[in-house]
Image (cartoon, rainbow, N blue to C red; front, side):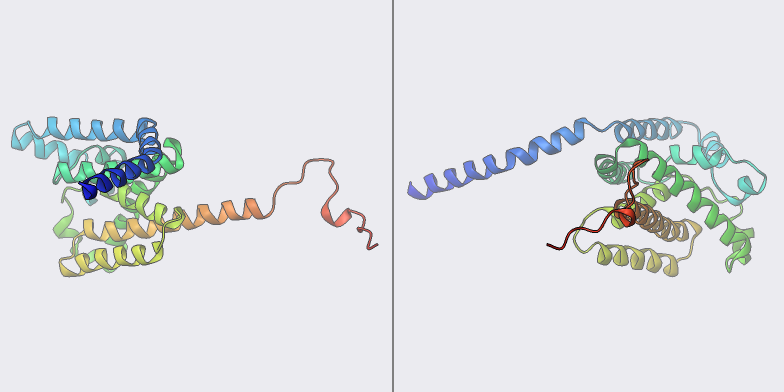
Length: 241
């Protein structure tokens, strides 16, 4: 009986201690704007497209794919529309999207999250396109010229890289290095341009995060002097007593 009472008291204390955390998490989740709307749109469009007949579904995916054929012909709209469909496990994609974008939006707000996601998605796609045409992978272009490439992973990994570069997370350098090693291992085991894109997206996100972090530190270190105020070097020397 005594042990039962002690256990209940400990459980009550733990519940009391968790209440502020639960309230904070609940407030953050209710404050999300971009993440749930975008995830719902991607899930809806992907589900609808998968109900189409196979030939129509494949044609629609190819038209909105950031493959070499589309980009080489000057079709730029897939840079945006390709991020509205998932060509893999939709459940896993939604879980990862909600976790990563939700964390970013809670930390940055929806505007910066949207800009980071789009910049990461578009930049990664163009870098991979350039590497395939000009880099050491150009010999494989003929084999993958019309390989469909749609999904949310490029932007998602870029956001994750930016978070790792800016979010005050313990051992974030180790986590970033482990992710980079994992993406590199997957690419080297069975090279595809999607796997190459994940590696590029992580590097792009880390670069964007470092750049944004450096700008913020410079602004903090050297605040602007209001007009008309004396500069520090023009101030009279303080008395020495």
